[in-house]
Image (cartoon, rainbow, N blue to C red; front, side, top):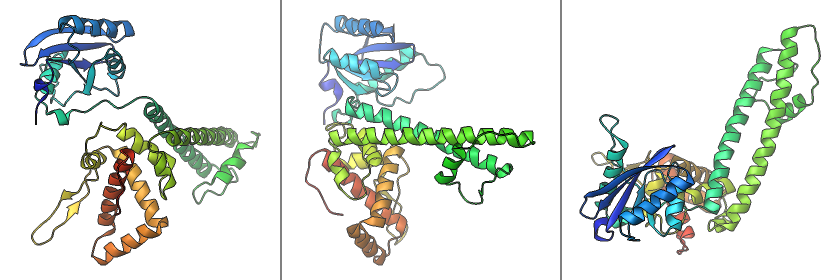
Length: 350
């Protein structure tokens, strides 16, 4: 297998930060040709790309290895692509916080990329629908966090103060809607007055967050239907949020070369845990935890609602598998199935 240095005459290592990016141009031999810093404004990144072109003699095979293509390096990645350059996510260089500089880091990125196998390069995730879904999923997480926090505050408030609500169990949406219609009134107890007013505000906030969550889910569903992941929605157990997360992590065909690598990304590839005469595999606790969570949700849903999955679970239990081991096997199958669906390859059975 060939390395990057065999295919690209130059590699531009980019150490990305909020205010400035540092660019280091390395030749195929690993010599640092030049290093410069440019601001992260559109004009600054445009000047950086022009500087790269002049320094490399207009070699369009030059490869940009950008740190954080989904965060600080996202805008640069887009501009470099529009200029006609190939971009990849910078490999891990083991940067130390002691005795370092951004110029050194950029050079380390360039040299580390030169030594990478071509098939180990990571393409930046796509924009378009995937980018929109990533924004909506992040927004949904914030909405759910805010709603949970507000419900916890409301529950605590109604348990510490007698507001006429039975909160021995988890507060229901029916109770929250009732509280939202209350009017603040003076009961003669100033603490109860403010507790009641705060309860009304919290209940109304929860209802507003419920509406935002519903709108958010509808938008996610509409975008997923337009994406390559749309066919997954027709299958039992696949909800719009889980499918959206799968598509966001997958990004686009060609980014992840094999379904085994996709399984590793999801943290569902089996890890040997054998001892003596016992041959076992355990769960992988690494990888993309959001993707892993989406597969876990689908697996649990299918175990409850899908007859074929129920039969599979029963068969594996008879073989002596624990429920945890069965879920691991199911998640591995789901990762394989999702990958092949998104790559338009023939489906498989568990």
